Image (cartoon, rainbow over all chains, first blue to last red; front, side, top):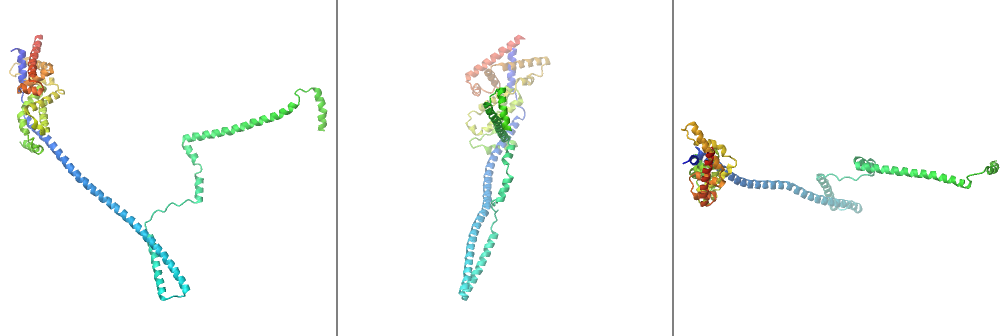
Length: 243
Length: 185
């Protein structure tokens, strides 16, 4: 056997004869145990979580339902009582009004009939006392009725005027805040200014041109070049006219 | 022992009736073989042990399908082989060769001869790494010397004749290269 063969066989034999480290089996089993525990625990945990989640979900649902019922009962009760109370109040008011009418009729009857029978007077007294009780009941019910904020009152004329005075320049103030609006407003003012002064300039120019035409008219009548003889002829007449 | 009993308890609670497998018996029966297979690829004891642990963790994971395994021995070796080859991409066995060769050299020989032997064995390992992948795999798997050709063919996914041819060629090529290397010296 050559030396390479020998070396090769020794290496292969070394690979074949290698022995597992001491305690490897124990370590493997320990690791497997840990893995199995983790997985088993996870399985049980999932199961537990599933059951617990179901229980918790049911419990939360029941609690939510109880809370909703507890909140809904007073609201429903209040609405019912308000409606009933309103009906009572209306009925009592109608009854009171009827009682007052009856009382008035009774008094009129008393005057007309001049003290009627005792039975009639006793009936009217009973009705009056009933009416008083009804009025008291109406007052009590109104006093005990649920209070609500009063609706906003409409503004008076003076308040409207005050508002107009206070909020007179709102658009201008807003334009001061908004640069675009401000620029637009400035452009409008400038344009207005230009328009105004352009009109003024036109008027001035028109004013200047109209006297020139007025002056030009007599010059057309007078000949531009006058001879001294003509001037001399016209002078005495003018002096005479002056005189 | 207590841990083994605990493991049996845990497993018995988890396993179905069809997949009753005594894992501790499997570990006792096959851990040595799996260690050698993994060590032939990795040449590191700690890495090989990790591979063996991973193999049995896989077994635990697939405990429900264990009943479908025809040959438990081949199945376990195949898992160990694949895991070791996968791990070899991260671990360079060349780094472990010094320690492995140091363990192979006889301590009774003089120091100069021991150094020479260590050099030769390291050269063998280096040339094994330079072999074509298929030949190297067959050679390393055959080094365990516990698997027949049919089993090796099943592990590697090749035919038996291919395995025989690859093994023959691997040995021839390795010998030639080692002789060439010796000749250059």
